[in-house]
Amino acid sequence: MKNEKRHRWLGIIDKIDGFEAAAPFEFKLKLKTPYYPCLEDLALARPFRFLSPAAFPEDGDTSQSIKAPHGTGAWKLTETALGEYDLFERNEHYWGEKPKAAKILVKVIPDPVSRALAFDSGEIDIIYGQGQINFDTFNRLKNSAGVSAAVSKPMGTMVAAINSAAGPTRELEVRQALQHMVDKKALVMGVTLGTLSQADTLFAPNVPYCDLGLPPYEFNIDKAGELLDNCGWKLVQGKRIREKNGEPLNIDFCFIGNDAAHKSIAEVLQAQAQAAGINLNLLGEESDSFYRRQKEGDFGLILNPTWGPPYEPHAMVSSMLLPSHADFMAQSGLPMKAGIDEKIHKVLACQDLKERSDLYREILATLHEQAVYLPLFYSALFEVHRPDRLGNVSFGGGKTDIPFREFVLE
Image 1 (cartoon, rainbow, N blue to C red):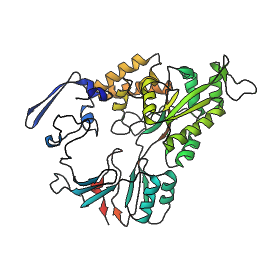
Image 2 (cartoon, rainbow, N blue to C red; image 1 turned 90 degrees about the vertical axis):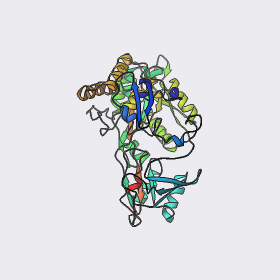
Image 3 (spheres, rainbow, N blue to C red; image 1 turned 180 degrees about the vertical axis):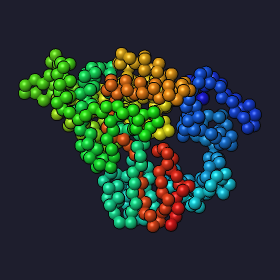
């Protein structure tokens, strides 16, 4: 809470009215209003976590570092070399079922190609996670003898936020046209080589409260053109980009420039937009500039991946209330923005399951109808391992949850 301003995107921050260590084994937390995801927020990897008193620095501020990784988990961190590796050993005093392996060596190999070479040579036994392996390498290994490869259930959505408060995208018809112009099947094949599935909604149907059956925006260039014609963006004879009052239909599309996947997505969407008479001006920038644009609303479209479990939907919906990410700015031009925010406050405080489900439906259906999000594909975790070396490999419940405890050395 010493750094609460940095974390106001998380709903519980503004709900906390006080806290105290009332007794050696008693902690009291007082909230200003009911808040149904309280325990979920306290169980996140960040910004809150349970930490041993022995791990706190002298000033109690954990924003920069902790004193030492004391804990009660299944593993003990016994050796570390920054940027090289971390060695974990089984915690023989663990209160639950102990890990099946005695040691886990986690190697830091920054480059996906180098990771694949390390796997091919037998230097490492498993590659696991999101973005840890190239799509083409995954497909190669999946079809290799003696290799097991798998893709998890959806762990988030690759989505572009569309600015409803500035430029041509202030118009609903333009935002809807952007939805219809995207050939998602071609995008998924071109960018992910068919390893992921196309997304038609902001959150995947396996996310709580989000299996709503909302009608997808089908790929239809003619429909996109009709919508643009209706709001005055016309194709002038001899020109490829539509115009309105002499101004071309230019939209800035922002992404992180050194992210190969982001760059590929941007280039595919730029080519598809041209078929509808829209010019996407690609702005690939460093991450600091990219996140500044998110917060300040300095974009037409901007890649804005969702956070995956356990943050969805409550934590991401809560962040829509503040200009901490692209969501608030993307929605800021909507005439019903105040009503959406009111429903978000209500759903986070709601104790009735049916009412909560109805409120989530109203919020997500409105955002879907207003076309402020362009879902592209559902992200996932990937893993490859050799079953003759490693067994009982499975996926955890979130991006940072790796079930090493279950892995068995064969």
